[in-house]
Structures are given as structure tokens and as C-alpha cells.
Image (cartoon, rainbow, N blue to C red; front, side):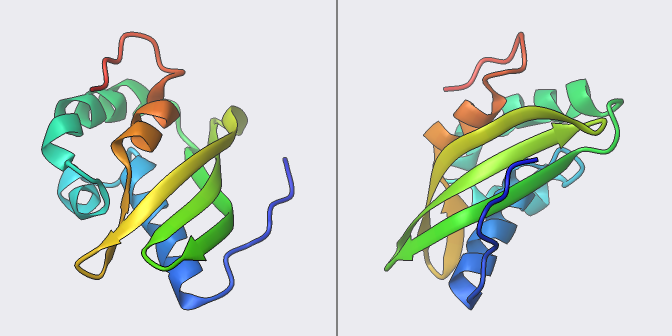
Amino acid sequence: MPVRRAPTDGDERAVAEAVRLALDPAVTFTDAAPHLVGPEEVEATRQTFAALVAGLGAFRVEVGDVEVDGGRARFVVDVYAAGRPVQVGLGGEAEKRAGTWQLRTTTFCGALASVPLLVCP
């Protein structure tokens, strides 16, 4: 498991939580949507993703190396399923809109790229 700098301040922790909520298939789409830029564009993809990985168990999203610059943030995500790495070292971006950190669509789709059969806008 790679070592990443853990989020330390309020914005860094808020970014990490937004990423986790957006990517964790156990989180309902209703709870994830506020943390996605353009959630309507990716709703079907996220629902399909959640259904496909539902049986894997032990799914976790680790977010680290968060760097906040005003209303934009960069971070690194490591995704694990059934105790094994699925995506490691995925760089991503988020932006703060109306006080809520949101994962960019390109980052969301990049995180799901390793799952066959998923089409992401």
C-alpha cells in the first residue's frame, strides 16, 4: 500500500470526503450526487458501477496528497476491492462550488476506467 500524505486541514479533509462519497459504490447516488460535477451525466454509469462491484466486498477509497489552491484541489486516489488494489495512484481534481467540493467528471470516469463494460461521458 503506497504511503500518501493524509489530509490535514478542513478543506483537505472535505476534498477527501467528497472523493470518497463520489467513488464509493456503497454510497447511494443521492448522497454522491452533490459531490459530482454534472451528476446527471454520470448517474447511469455510477449506478452500473455500484451494481457490478456490489459483491466484491471490502471496497475502500483512500485519498491522499491533497493540495488545495483556492476553489480547486488536486489529490491522489487509491482504490481497493476485496483487499486488493484496483486503482493505485490515480490523480484527480475537484472544485468547490457553492461551498461543496465536487469531483470533476474526467476524474470520476478515470477512476472507473478499469471496470469493463462501463461507458462514461
